[in-house]
Length: 285
Ligand code: PAF
Image 1 (cartoon, rainbow, N blue to C red):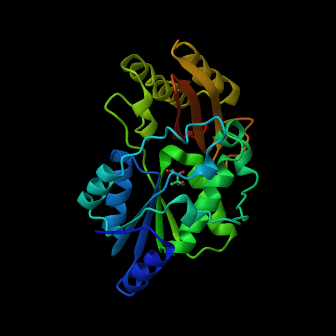
Image 2 (image 1 turned 135 degrees about the vertical axis):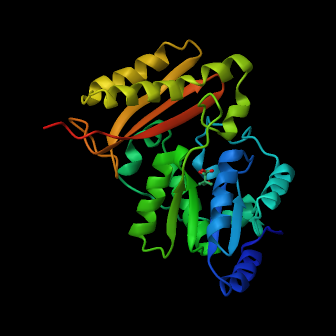
């Protein structure tokens, strides 16, 4: 497995690889868990060459967020990437990604003014910018993103379509712990009691989904189920509990079609997010 630190090294590597078949990119911020490995395995099964980027992107963190303390373990990450059959890892530093004089940003409108976009101003501008740069550096045929960051995947799908990027965006289902907690690098911040409490996000989603499957069609009542379930957990502090229509997060008067249930809460030091997609059963005649 090659490790590249500069854009020039990546370009040289990918130029040769592209002649042999599809190139897949898995963009990450490192500190791998099984969710990252699922992305790498999917890319490995579909592409001739698999590239993983590891870069904790300062641009997508707010001033009071966890950029400095974000968990990092590059040596372990490299071992895991190699075990997953990755061909090349791109690990740039800040100077390589944002050299002095850097002044260009990518802004996706509309989709980013709700959910995490509302709670974390500037976050998706940082994500859209770094992902566009990674796409231009690697020029993959396919890029792989986890469904846990559902809104992020939609933002990236939107930017790829709007900017006519010649690649396919593939999303991979959320990988969960046996008790339902979505895998996340930030789970490492949780104390044992907080780790237990953190399952409330998934429990709230399941409860709301079951209500929809049992006939609930009022968005406000579904939001209430999500919020009340999380509020009942003393160690969790609710950020948002929302339901939107898919594919593009439309506001809804009544639930129909495919909907996204999405929650975010702070548990101790960790801000956690989770979601479920629910196919609303059609009304009976
Ligand atoms: O999902 C992540 O890990 C990051 O937001 C991404 C897509 C690698 C951009 O920094």
